[in-house]
Length: 153
Length: 222
Image (tube, rainbow over all chains, first blue to last red; front, side):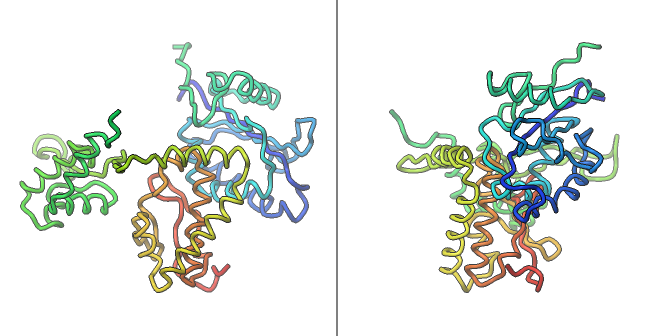
């Protein structure tokens, strides 16, 4: 097993309440897309409440901001899920559902395999990326950093 | 400053002037995977040795990539030499005279659209452009329209899939933006020729275009 897994966070600001007609398309896709993620090769973990998704978690002052936090076996696995499955079809509608976020709205970083990031840590990673640009501590698909060398061996 | 296209690109394009090479390149590119010397020779109707010579020229020029693999079931001694297999190279070859760099402009425009969050405006523009183009060729089947735009359509179980993404580099950098634009463009083409736009759908997979066109049915008119 790899010594590290890839953590990803992204945040999105709702354009309208989750239970309104504007977001109905998004809400309808939550369950199938989460199920697709859960079964996707390389999926490790995702943040969720007892509802089965993370839509109730609003960790920012602006409570329209939702957070998506997950862990994957590799960058390639995450990339394949995000851009080469039906997930892409859902992302196509992102502007109808979410406001454009000031950069960065997404961050990636490596975690020791078997550990799970917290929401507070995810917020720190976004801040790190905003402050310093892509570094080993917080990076993006476009400027990825390799998995750290295994220090335990 | 020398602004002619790089020698390598010119040489690669020049190679395709030879009809046998062009036919071999077309066969390998259209096969969508690896092709052996025998298969290519047979498809084009030339001798194996001649096909091998030209295929290797195309590899040298960077238009094809070669690999070696045993084709049969047998392993170990007696399995024979591995076959040399050819596939289309991932890299792009382009030459423009006078020099043009639309790709640079496209990346800048895509970055600006992304920053502005103008996905929906881009999708609307793509849809309009597709409709207009479709109307100009309203008598054509959608496969022909897609082929003429470089998508390299092929059929798979009644579904038209697209082997080539005409926007590959841009889509790699801005997948959500560009794949959505692409879908809107193809929806527009369908609408323009009087087909249901709903026949086009996002069905991405690694190594092919993100859009597929379903066979006509009652369920997909929108």
